[in-house]
Length: 137
Image (cartoon, rainbow, N blue to C red):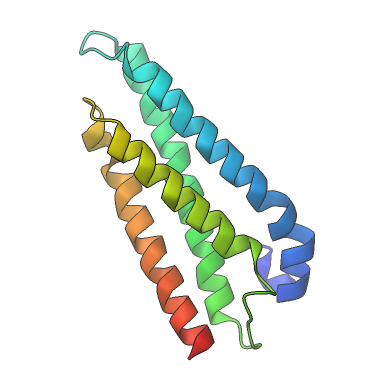
């Protein structure tokens, strides 16, 4: 909600470059936690189901926030260069790579639970690619 009050250069130096590397680390730790917990998953373990569902909700919220950042940057009237927002594409690509590697390596009973995350990743990837097309356009 505070993004419209900052210029793109202020966003990069005051927010993106500081916050987004931490977002990548937290997202990776959530993926790691899912990998650790999947072994104990069973239909009787409702506590673990709730725990994993909460992790997935946090991941979806993170992706939605990143999508909002991309939408904002793409809607700016000032000219945008990737150098001005270098942390945002880097963060998104890291999360995309980590998530796809995790999903590829994890064949598990919670694969269906990743549907929301995969859907959001595909959407954010398309938005990012569209934004890159517009910026280089």
